[in-house]
Image (cartoon, rainbow, N blue to C red):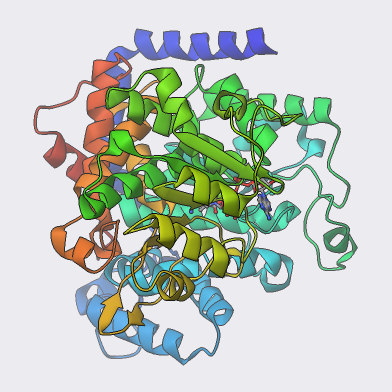
Length: 575
Ligand SMILES: NC(=O)C1=CN([C@@H]2O[C@H](COP(=O)(O)OP(=O)(O)OC[C@H]3O[C@@H](n4cnc5c(N)ncnc54)[C@H](O)[C@@H]3O)[C@@H](O)[C@H]2O)C=CC1
Ligand SMILES: CC(=O)C(=O)O
Ligand SMILES: [Mg+2]
């Protein structure tokens, strides 16, 4: 399979070289081509009014109403998009729960794409938590019950041998970003089977809103290989493949076939692996990363966002990055991915590889991971410390970590004693509670500020409202890979980078940290305001393009004014 995968990829590369001019031209003009496509659709009357990509609904002008057979189909008023957004927000805010708002917004996306994305971009701080974590967690749990209309692409074991054929059913010809999950580790919620489709759908919404990848160029994919979640399988409304997860060999063959089929149908697409169980996440990253354009968001995207938060924290604490000790609770994708990228960052800061590894400390359920531990996961082995066995709390007292990172998926694992200990060994303790959704966070923002007497530098995977402590109001930042993957995807799209490399994530972390302003830092935030996320993604994309050029991976010739070029590729939803 290894051989056949690399030969498929080599053939695709060869074809793309042979048709160099055509490939270059199509990389440079994807949106123009798409706009021509839209005009050629030539829709009229009700069909135009109900086409989610083309409708302007009440904003169709009198002239358009006349020209496109819309007279009588709309109320008199010609609304501006601004007024439509006001109406959307008014209706949405009337809903009494986050999940109702999610359903409402999803229906808007199916009705009027441009209005949905304009609303999301202009009100990103309000909308993102409804479309993404934490609400997307609840939406996944209830996916089969709130399902209204199919979105995304489903592959099951019954499609074996035919994936390349059925991919032709997807109506778009120019896919640049594929977010794929098998639903086995959805946020901190475990195996949600096909219900996990909510995650690729949410991540795609972020690609569009946060980085301006055109919605038609993004594809959510569910590799529905069954679920070991018995309650789900017994749910009469469950929509997925209603069997236990398939055996390992069939599973691997299916993933291989999917990756190969993508190379044939969508050779320009970057594959983002999302929310796979950690052993599979690492296995597929190792297997495909050097061969096809792909990355794992939970390992690499998370690593970059966490590292950026650590870099920024140094601007507050005055500590040198090269002097830090970093402790992780949890040994999964998020924690080990972050540690691996931190090694690269330490080495760049002047440490040797071995010195860098000694700065990273892992805690599991039994306490500090040391040379005395048995059955250490392969990715954790480089970080085993020659230290006496001790509990989590003792490890903080003894090692005095500058930074504590939680990636357990388990609520309350940073309890009062832990936070107080971090505050006892640091003037300004840095605590990053990565786990999602909010109900699974290691500690809340309020707890972190209370238990550290207002001294903590805090970030969390899901957003928290501002916290008042004494006279100060802190605006805790959201440490989420949403700051990273959209810019990576945009940079890879812009440069046609053949592969997605670790240095792209290191550079993304540096760029993200550099975008944080002094006033954001004063508010207690180690990440930029979400309202600036499109500019942040653009900056990351430009840096990714530079890495792609330096590493000889860019298949597209890039202009000197990278920023203007990348901005010209970004989708701006407007009428
Ligand atoms: N903020 C962000 O951008 C991201 C957040 N995450 C979140 O991080 C969490 C973990 O994700 P993965 O690393 O992929 O999961 P994982 O399941 O691979 O890792 C979880 C780790 O936590 C350990 N653990 C569980 N309970 C523990 C306890 N009480 N004490 C010590 N260790 C404990 C497990 O043994 C395991 O090593 C999830 O909630 C996920 O949503 C993941 C990726 C990105
Ligand atoms: C944010 C994310 O990717 C996760 O929690 O899995
Ligand atoms: Mg994830």
